[in-house]
Length: 149
Image 1 (tube, rainbow, N blue to C red):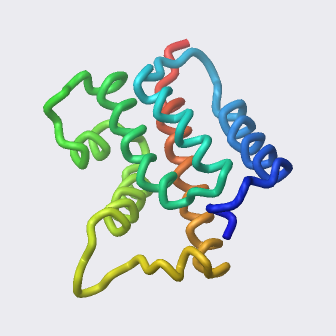
Image 2: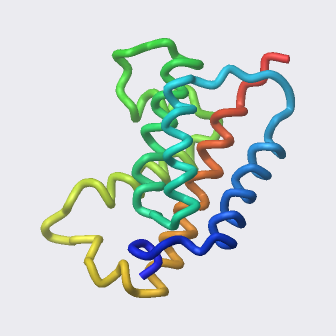
């Protein structure tokens, strides 16, 4: 299982380069990026590079929350759902990501979504990778949505 093995250096570098390219292609001017969110993003990037897909999906909302709270709303009291809806440009994709994160974080005893064996199933891992890749794209989009130059 990839998650519990030493990472393949070439694959790690390929994933890291993809993130760096996404960032480079998103920069169109000067931006205010939350220092707190930037620190969280470094962990998010490490999780993505190593293939910890669930961690990427779950952590992405925390990165978005920190960034939008500090750079867009300036409000410590606003709830995350309202924060994301009011201050992220692209409401549908952010709501899809928030629902996805909630699906993995909040256990529904009647309809459990995660099973240990899913971590060993290639099809499940591929789907998680796709979701994690979309989560990274959304975070990067949020970082660079409001240029000031």
